[in-house]
Length: 296
Image (tube, rainbow, N blue to C red; front, side, top):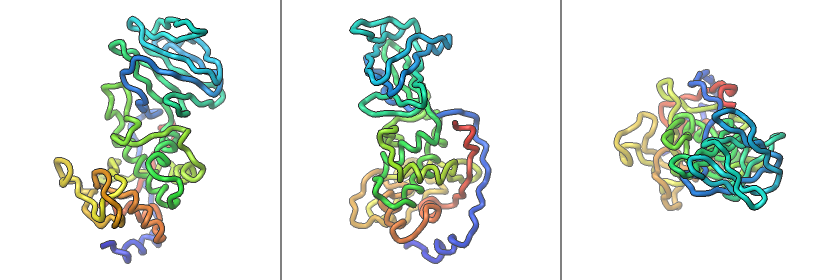
């Protein structure tokens, strides 16, 4: 069972954040569409299409207008006024002006979009600052009506998972999927004031073990008891132990390793803060703070 005395003592401990200097990387790249034969993209403001190979401006998209893109003979074509116009590049980036948003898959996203023609198929990548990515993860992974400290715990876990898995999908040209296979990511369309506050209040905070950021695995519920990593995958991890998950009565959903999201919310209802919740679900860990300038 949960050691309440231990957790209560944490309240009186001053959290000493370590400073972690990660490998330089100025954004995270999320795959929104992989190897599709066409895509539809729009922007809330005017948006520049730039050739990634030459850094030259190709075309300016009008605001609030949808454009169809498709691969064409090794390059990319865009449909303008009912006719396809060939872009003499296999890699382009779309940059909205004035902090605008870009739409694809019926959602709005922050940052820039990169389109790549590889093998005559298009891959659509959202390139954006880490904290803006986490803003789109927290409400996609956890209901915005849940407890604030559960949201903060989710933000730290999601940030840790993302940084520990940078480059995981490098063969596709990006870092992570936008699905629960990595982390659910709903872009700006998913954001709420409550979850954005949780992200900003934990900016840069990650979980570390043995000096390294951990992939802080989590799932919706563990059905009363979390599982050790060795029970699900090939080996045990020192920072993942089997513990009561505080989600009794909720059917197990997901792998059950690491933090139970329902359990985190239930603990927050009992008055535990985000750091207590995380220390409970992730053994032998400390909190660290990365340099936020590196990931902008």
